[in-house]
Length: 414
View 1 (cartoon, rainbow, N blue to C red):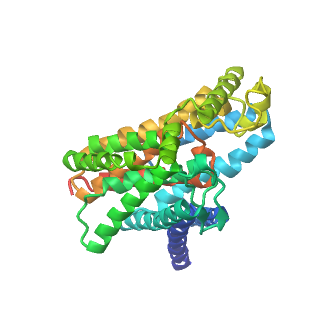
View 2 (cartoon, rainbow, N blue to C red):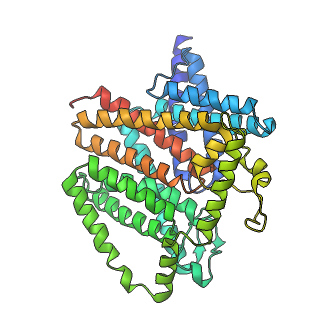
View 3 (cartoon, one colour):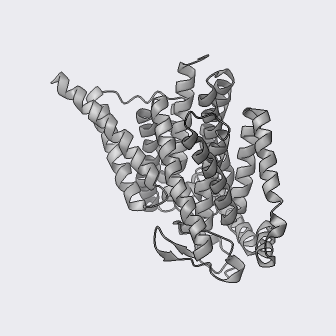
């Protein structure tokens, strides 16, 4: 009986590990596979915990996460639409948090961290090829869709297999930062070394071609982070190379220059719409400032606060600012609880990064934290945390950062 229990635990560990590898690979490709993989790894997680009779998580983020879940639960009780809030609480929030704990449980060695990052980059390579292919052909070979932005004002933007260019950028931004933090690492294999550097260049090209202003701002913050906390000499070389690449911009055609200048101007239609959405979110929060209008109810309440339908005639929408939407839906307590999670992670991470003497491992930690920072900054301009694929990416990055903390603390001075 005892032997069977041990075998079950081993099988559950393998299911969680390889299920996460599949999930990460198909993250930008198939929402159906994401849901299937998420269900399987969560089920394996619970079976293992039942076998070992231990449900204690024991991570640095346990208390902030529990407080965040509790406050979101209160927002459900006080919700303007309890049915919507219950559905969002059970099928989105709890599922995402459980994915975090599965990552912490399953990706618990240096080898497994390297494995999941390798798979993440292999998948990103496919997405970059698709994006560049789309730039030249206006077609996506993964989903076989014609490019909807085929009129002149949009001929520079790509979106790969995602629904919008902004979603593609949200996926690429943290990966660019993680890649750049390891750009000058001396890998033993020359193939790995140069493949990794070529991917870094491809990621930068695709991030640029997505023309997402929020992603660019997130990228700048992430890049500054790895410059400040990484190896400064090499980081400044990287900055110099990026600046040199911008010298090619004058050679763009006039039409492409016009598109680029238009994207840099935040007073365009997109910027104007986001100002209206932020105002609607602010007014929604003022009505219920403590617990918010209820988890997942932003679109349900949208039209009540859209006072001028001529000003914004497109109907209910997300806030395109994750923090404003969180404030409106879960109140000031919900936003503060979420920020507590992030602040706790960064404070603990920076302390442990300073004492780490493992060269590669330290760079991975800096890259993961910088990538998460880039993602969070971009989330102030888009719907990242509320998308299925891009939202799960956040909880995976959070789990990997947590594991890096634990592994680095367990190997101080090594």
